[in-house]
Image (cartoon, rainbow, N blue to C red; front, side):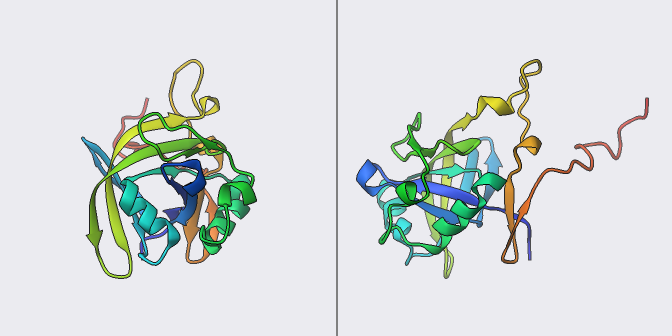
Length: 179
């Protein structure tokens, strides 16, 4: 089993009256050039038909402060609830697609579907990344670098939510020369 995985809110819909959120743990990066991500969704989920019809979605990274909302959105259906309203989350404008971002999320990854692969119980929506919005509080004012470790992102591990944040090394540290 490959764990932990990110616990994200995927937003979809082209009009406010159909906006929906679905909690996804089966997501990730598949390519850097061109930038591409995926999400895997069960066909019986309410969001599935919206995703298939519109071909757009936003991967919204989530934080420890959002954990209860993330969990609630994963166990309730958009057929029965307006998840944005129920969880007091704010839909905001994407820059390149019609699906909304979640304003409370520190990072919003706008995606356009390029292919749907029917894999079994889940179908994978392979998508190109068309834009990324980042909360400016995560950008270091002097270096301009993104600092996600201080944002308390959450992951999902065998039925539990966990927090990311303890740095144990950096890429290449095992071979870097000591000063």
